[in-house]
Length: 372
Ligand code: HEM
Image (cartoon, rainbow, N blue to C red):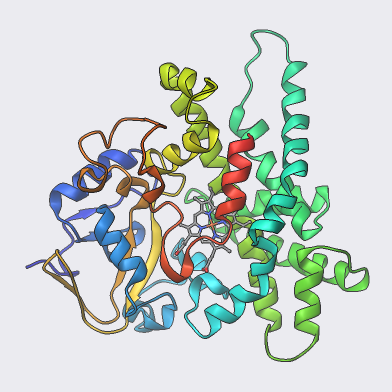
């Protein structure tokens, strides 16, 4: 009988071999106790069906008030993932607060609003590509730094009305916050940098509102009708500003790598009668997803997970290794390891999660990657 007191393996915080780790986890069981960075314990799964159950089960919560180890003071305040888990935004809330916060921004992510961004996304992509045309033959281009990062960065910052200088500073600070190699001094500096940057932006937009998401959120907050507190305003901005950067950047670079490593599939995608770029992006989301693990859900009561024989006890956390669930042969068959954009069920992947917290930016992420 497995329990959290006896982890059977540890998850590599540097994600050096996501797929190898996923295979090992599947061999160990459908849902197994693991150790994370800093010896924090959680249940983990690399099985598609178990992942789906966890994302959609009504008795799992996102609010860390449900995490027993945290509430008992067992998690040190400098645990590197804590900031992400404590961010006071929809990501870490349950209904009714989750629904309230999500509805305040959802109009910025409707299919129509996202479709209206297409020409601008195309324009930014063209500008970035143009720089490559003036690169001397033989000169190396860093696709990640010079293309995959600036595209989502620019598009999302424009949604918020963020100017270039503030954007560059915020990006550097935010990257530092999510790098497990950052020193504690730099961590502190980066935390202040993000908070100051968001505060400055709110002050500026309050004085000069424009047609952007920041001004919309400020106006909701300033109605003082209880829909958005000051802390929620800034934390919602931090969440949306950054939830789409690294993810979309990884999706673009992973797709490029898949297509370079599979030249036959690249030719098929390019052919007029082929599956097309959206399918290549979808297959990348399945096979080499941009997110490795989706962080904690906490059991609000003892939950027996179907098909696993495991009961997750009240207050215990679970992570879903979505970077690996896309290669679960139980769902994607014997060819689960193969990159094949013509695959009919690639879209079943869990890269955008499922259920109430399903990625609100999925249509935007897909559009940016497909355009890129
Ligand atoms: C390809 C790129 C992307 C991937 C793979 C991705 C993945 C995810 C995943 C797995 C979640 C669920 C997290 C959880 O349940 O704990 C999520 C939530 C979220 N994502 Fe994305 N994301 C992407 C792009 C974006 C973009 C472009 C934006 C916005 C500009 C965005 C904004 C959000 C927000 C606000 C949430 C929280 C939703 C909620 O809690 O209700 N994401 N994303």
